[in-house]
Image 1: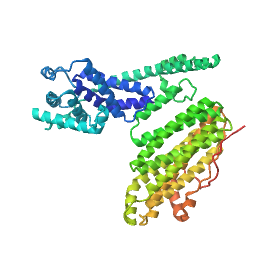
Image 2: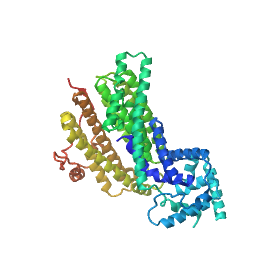
Image 3: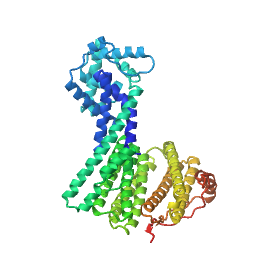
Length: 163
Length: 407
């Protein structure tokens, strides 16, 4: 077995989670798909140089995050209000049964996100959508676990107040 | 519903659609194949530059020239560079891909134990490469030093991870990994020592391995003390606590021992014509010893729980199963080395295994009790010409790992 097999297995394991992570940062199905693929291509290039990786999951999120940072530098941040008005502007992909319920849920989350800045959204997505603990988030974002918790609590308070 | 719960609920509701996922995977595979080919090309270009700078004769430099042709053939054949590189040894044009492939596998191997085992396997891969080259007398000083360096890097990582298991007080995993590592090192040390008659550089590698094997043996002994010594409480509660904690571990060790023994028997069956009959006979003797450990460990495991911690039967069983693993593992390594070297050089080796104690000698148990269990247990190990089950013959232990090139 070559490393290729393991790499493609890892794609199967993490692609959906990375896609969700990217989608709730860029709010575009097509762009989130591209970023997911780009994350894996960058990961392969890094590994192909013979560099060592300890925690694959954190490694992939770190790459995705760097790509998202590059993205935000290049583009003006998307207006969530405009997105919500144009209900067909985004479609976060295949969701299985009960599509209506899913759409409502997504709209509610985006509504909540409107009062948050990009960094606050990031920690909430990583904590509750990606299931990463504050220590892992801290490692990926290059901050302390304590700062992650503070930012997370502050963000939740803001959303509760707003909604 | 709380906002954080809404976010959590989205997990199952937002994902890539299957068609996009398949398309992305196909694209990734294409990207990897292309990337790999370009990488091999580049690595070999660098190698040629280095060689030209070191004034290596033109004829030797020309050895790397057909790489373009090889890459082209592999690309057309569709097998990929990675697959072709799997059997490459240092000095081969595709060898750089080996390290990359292994690194990627290491990165995507899940779990601390599996990662450590894989790192140990990488260390052994380097030793197998040294053995292959030594068997053909092609182990130059340069290659030896590179192999030693790479071997040490992998072995050091294994040692670090063993320490991490210890720090987490996961003595079961620490003991198991260390014991397997020690056995592999010792088997390769013996093979390389014997091969040093054919290629003197093999002696240097054997010495490096010996140092690591000694360190692994010391570490294993220290870890086993921690694993098998109950901590705190009265003798009775400590024994019971240890029994509860160790029983699943002992059972897993037993399954592993049986898996390795079957693997060795299957290897013999599939490669009999390539193996020296003497080696086969000796390996089978080793497997009988392993079997006796399993039988005896099973008897201990089935025995009533002891109240005296010093003779806790589950602990004893775990110890015996680990010995069975070590013996079967050693037999498998020697068998594979013999078959590989024979395939490489066309020369049959004569291998003798180191004398080992039978489990009976070690513990001095009554023979009647064990004989019954031996008969019951050996049926699990059979391997006849058509795959049917046959009991192994009675024990007869002898020998030392001793590989000689036949004239």
